[in-house]
Length: 150
Image 1: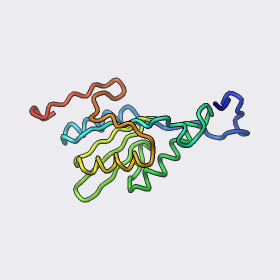
Image 2 (image 1 turned 30 degrees about the vertical axis):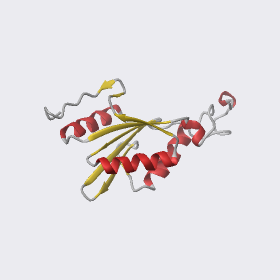
Image 3 (image 1 turned 90 degrees about the vertical axis):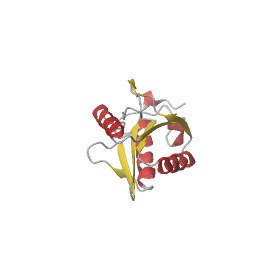
Image 4 (image 1 turned 180 degrees about the vertical axis):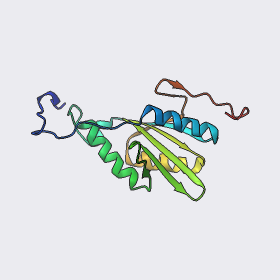
């Protein structure tokens, strides 16, 4: 393990900050998903720091975020200008949203095949754990009843 506590700002590292999706953005996206009866799936990146940066370094979070951003935009996702951890992909009438919260990913969309393709692509790029349909995100319980339209 690296000894991040020995690193000196301006000498060993520049940035350590890594953005995460804003809570209010997540709430809005969940409301949109409920309104349009979109699917909501969750994934987790295994050993996030070992994918790009060395675990224990202060800039590991920031390095991971930069690396992920480059990859996801290379797959035709567009970064949201107000929340840098929300991305959108449109293909015809299919729409998918990806929200990044450190190493947790929430996928929302109206086309199951498109979401499966995105999950397969993510899994080919990173060591991912597919958590299936989302039931909890940031201590928010997601309850869906398609018979009642919610």
